[in-house]
Length: 107
Image 1 (spheres, rainbow, N blue to C red):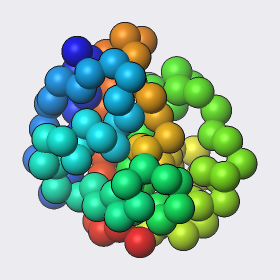
Image 2 (cartoon, helix red, strand yellow; image 1 turned 30 degrees about the vertical axis):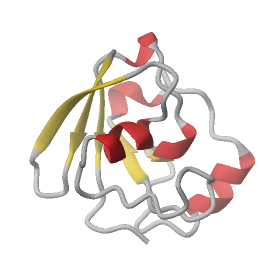
Image 3 (tube, one colour; image 1 turned 90 degrees about the vertical axis):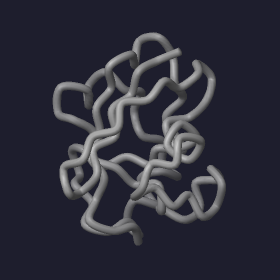
């Protein structure tokens, strides 16, 4: 299991264990984290799993693929440096301790 910290817009932090192989979005959904809607279920077609990656983690993640870049245009208040769709981030041991902040709202 990999520990991931999801920080709600109001500052409330949720530290949860997410299994390797799942996505960061599935970790939020499966642990009832408020602020991740995941309307498309992980198909990279809605931008409702948008989050801001903590700056110390941005360079440690795989690069955004073109489809994710395109969908982030539909996210609420995207940050070019920190915004990611959590459905596109696969959990592995290297992500243990990942911290991300959730936007004020989705889409």
